[in-house]
Structures are given as C-alpha cells and as structure tokens.
Length: 352
Image (tube, rainbow, N blue to C red):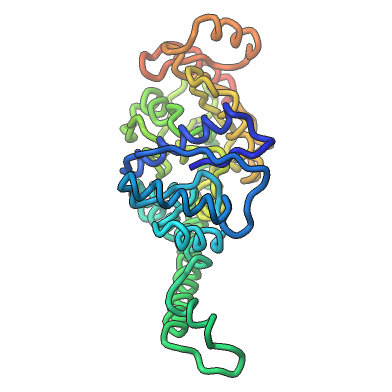
C-alpha cells in the first residue's frame, strides 16, 4: 500500500508502489493487491484513518492475504494500531527491506550489520501482554504484572544485544581502517562502485576484474562488499575496485547506521563510480537517490565518475543526447562488454 499526498504526483506514487512490489517479490512474497490511499495528511494514530484501516483489513482478508505492507515508514504506535484495526500483521517498507537484507547477508560482518539494524528497528516496536496490562493497572507504586515483566526482560535483552553487536562492528571497522591505511602506504588507488540497487554494479565488477560476485535480477542481490585488484595498463598506481550494497530511495536510517562501517570504504575512496542503469525510465530519480545517500553518509565530496550501464538496452536517441550532456561520463554494457575499454582508459587516467 502507498500513500498519495497532495505534494506527490500520480507517477511518483505508481513508481513507488511498483518498487514496493519488487521488494515484496524479492523477499519471497506474492502481491495479491496494490492499494493507493489519497489523503490530505497522514493520520497520527493509524496513518490512514481508523475507518480506512478497517476497510483495508476486510479487503486483505477477502483476498486471503496474511500481511499488509506500507510503502511509507510507520511509527511503532501506527504499526500497532493498524494491526489492531486490520486484524493482520502490518509492516512498513523499512521492515520489508530488513527482511530482504537478513535473507541475503552472507559474511560475518553482513550478518552482524543486519541483526543490529533489525534489533534497533524491533526495540521500540515490542508489544506484548505488558502493554495491555499497563492500561488497566501498573501505575506508579503498583506492582507490575507478569506481562510487563516479560516485556521489560525482552527490552533489556535486545538492548544488551545491540551493545554487543556495536562493539563487534567497531572492531571490524578498525580492521578495515588498518587495511585501508596499509593500501594507501603501498600507493594503491581505491575505486568504489556505488549506485542504485540492481543497476549492474556486480556485473561490472565481474567484467572488469574477473571476479565471481553474485549477479541476479533482483533488488539487493548482494550485501557483502567485494574488493578485487583491477589491472590497468599505463596506470602509475595499483588499483583496487570494491563493490558496495546498492542504494535505494529513502534508504532506512537503521540500515545506514548499521552499514556505516562498510560504507566507510565509500567515504575513503579515491574515486567513486556511480553506476546508472540508463535503460531505467526513472534513471534520473535513481541518480538523485544515490546522491542523497552519499550526502547522508558523508561521501558527497568524493570524486565521481558517472558510468551509464546497459547501453545495449537503452534508447539510441537518449544515449545520443546523454553523450552530449555528459561528455566526461562512461557509457558501457556490462553484459556485452561494449565501452569497457574506454572505461578502463578513464580509470587509468584517474589513477595516474
């Protein structure tokens, strides 16, 4: 489900809903219905209003749905109230992305980062019998019931787990920083691939370096960073090329915080390759989303080389116009290999 507010266009809402459907499918779900709710403002308690929430619940049950997904972020209170009103489990876009990340994390660091993000997301959403009991008893000076005690135990357990996970990530971050400093002392030029999820970054990494990073036509197919040596003729420095987790519009803050140590490589890179799927009708919006994330993680000052990928699928007239508008960009096809020689020449020039 997506919300359309007065400041949001019909095209933007439709695109957001389509992306939500792709995210749902990536998580293994099946979309049985898509709904757009038009409102002048967000309802503070139930996001869409109590009447609309009940109607949504009736619709979902009539379709035998067991989960309702909202494209917009829900507060813990809104999420709980919606579950009460609809009688079904409700999650928002952040919860959905976290589920996808948990399925795709492979490395030890990736698993830790995802668990941290999930724990930080879950903590304020803890609900249980303690909530109901606090409404009928449990005032100041009264003895808490078993439900409240269980809720408090769960909260403390998650808080302790969060502290432990943060310490582990801090240790891994120090290891990464040590490795980065060693590469700099050795005169290694670090290039980092960034871009919207599913733009073809892993395919490009494989083509340029002979790596075997996972490539699938799905959002967030890979989460773990892959670094490979990039042989460049005539380059004065040794060059390494690193892949990163794909970005997305409104990347959840929990994920940005949890993956901050991994994204340190983006902030410290000598050059960023912003990989753009030029065959995507909304590639401009994708570029804007990537730029927004770079600002959020403190990497907006890094040198950037734009790489328009998938030129084998793009409209020829569009490509002709873009070559004039972006004379310094690279135009490639990671699938066919077209344009890769020119990209390698640009990289060698940057590393010299």
